[in-house]
Image (cartoon, rainbow, N blue to C red):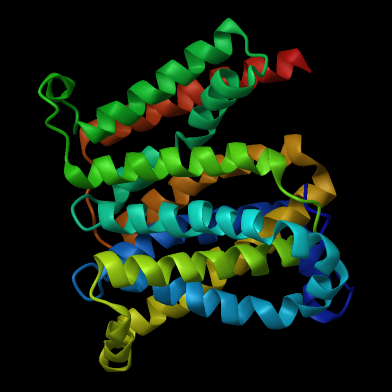
Length: 314
């Protein structure tokens, strides 16, 4: 596992880094904002170019802050760099490009609600792959949450499952969720390096993967030349996704876990779809349909049941 995040008590950052619940609100806020930001520029920038620019920019931003940690962890990194880069390729590059592709044909509200079931998908995958102990109530909670996801993906009409009539964009978002689930399970085997070292090497892997995908499936690496002429909105989104969901959210969550422990920090992930949905309505002007409310209620009920059952196990 990664080593805890070091911090120095200086100035404003000291006060912020000692406020665990504020940090555990900011992290899902930045992650939820990723969906809204990407949807904001659909049609203005290719998803593969958006992903590549984000990963390249995030790597350049993270490296200066990571240098001393990379030096300290170099003996481990030298042995395990392919694995560390693979984490970035899977959890940062592939997950986000599938999400961005999905947003070209589905709403940010749908995407936010569907990704809200990620904790349940991870719980189910842990049970299937690693035989992690799970109670009947946890299994029922997972099934309830997945029902809410499918209600969203079918736009409130379950009969569409029988004819495989599911929006392509929702399909890509569900694939993104499966990708992130696989990434989360793989973290069980991550080398013991500092969080900043992990992020630096993983984002390097994500940047390389993003560039390869851009060349193979997108408009090509030469499309980077088109970015300077893009609108201020695209530039604002690029800056946001390079910095906030890529680096600041990771640091905020890691510090929050350090202060209150993983069990008390984990439920903050449930705020991601909340912030994503709010941003979709307030910033993008998307409408909430009846099936959105029903799906959200079903997913929340499933998560609550599984969380309650998990607490009884402790």
